[in-house]
Length: 381
Ligand SMILES: Cc1cc2nc3c(=O)[nH]c(=O)nc-3n(C[C@H](O)[C@H](O)[C@H](O)COP(=O)(O)OP(=O)(O)OC[C@H]3O[C@@H](n4cnc5c(N)ncnc54)[C@H](O)[C@@H]3O)c2cc1C
Image 1 (cartoon, rainbow, N blue to C red):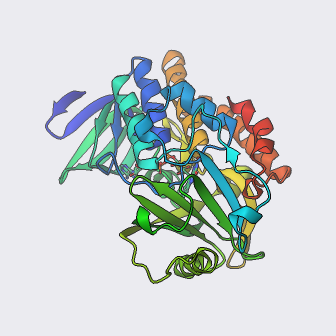
Image 2: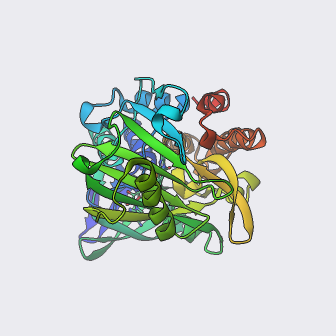
């Protein structure tokens, strides 16, 4: 990376956020010979609250094509995902757990993201960790990226910026300061593996009784298992308590057990903005990808307070896809001296039209009919 003075740096492309979308964008930009800087506020491998299941073929195919065969250290213990409804025992569920195809199986999110970071680095992207982006300012043909790096305020002058900074994106807020959206909370609680009352061969998903549609999941990992709770119908604490009560009733798990540690995250509900075109994820030479662009697969219409809105999930494939598209748009913008946004947005519209088809056909992956998703999502491969 070129240094103009101690606090000002230059790059062809600055990618903000080292999740799947940022790694895909940075890797593809670097492969195209662009001087690419990947900025991450945390220190990878960083914790990420995500189940990292890839039930759809598009996600498995794009991840495998972009990043190659998944190393063992990235994979979770169970090769199966087992869906259960509340109140049922595994033996009552009525069919065998679905075996995930081996092309790109169930992963640990922290390790998966780190693996993708390493791939971006080996393609030539430079990764700056512990670097918080505080602002982006479009000026002339370029973009000034303001950062706080290990306690020092600095600037990067870039030709292009990819905002891959996740659900609570600073870059999206900079482009759309007035954009309003709902959020949901989710929490993961980690317990020692020895306390698990479940068969560690499987990962489990439970759904609470209708109409309260919250879900919880149990995943076994290395020396521990975690209970992962989404909350919309109630507070996250009430959902977590209910999950543990369900675990007690069904499997005898002591609900008073203290977790070894727990972590919460905020899920942003932007699908209505994406599907309606109210969120336009690019301006000039700043492009948003992945969760920053509101990309998740539509799953269900739900309520938050009085609002009835689209819920979604499973965004890794869409983050990778949009990251690749952003790199392509930047490369074409350089060749044609056009704004990257004008090239990126029509491609982004293709993703939106697939998501609209899924929404219109009400293909609820919450009900486990993942295969139905493939006929829509395969158009993005
Ligand atoms: C509970 C839960 C379960 C999920 N399960 C699945 C699943 O099973 N399968 C699936 O496909 N998807 C799942 N998802 C969704 C998936 O995690 C996201 O769609 C995916 O991580 C989006 O990738 P991304 O690269 O856009 O953003 P992220 O992975 O969120 O990465 C954003 C990165 O930007 C960094 N960052 C943020 N702000 C700044 C800043 N100002 N400066 C520098 N860096 C910054 C963050 O630290 C982070 O590393 C789940 C999500 C949740 C919350």
